[in-house]
Image (cartoon, rainbow, N blue to C red; front, side, top):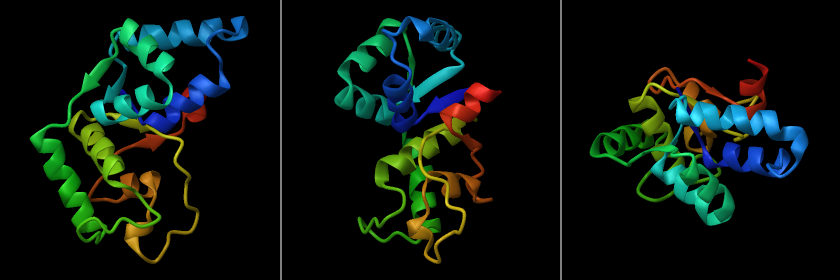
Length: 155
């Protein structure tokens, strides 16, 4: 199962326009994956998508996209990651934000591969609070597989 970050769904929508007939096969495949529950979304990511591109949110709803809610378990996982990253209170820096922690946590709970366009950091910053989504996912304590949309397409 693949859980989409808002960045990847927005990337797909913007770069592979659904109205372009050259991409019909891609969007038919995407719809099939949603129907088969292979592509899912956290409630947090879905709200971000719907707020930024309402027509994309409507398309996802019309294909009965599975939306995973923010559960108490996800909040606890996010809090543990926040502590691991040494983020104090609401002092988020250049790394992941609170929504990112929830999105990662929901992917972990559902044993999903997280699809994100968040930048890969070739050299990790000294402060873990500056880690982006892929670096956080790669931490042994988090252990959430993570890849970009283009890498998903290459599979």
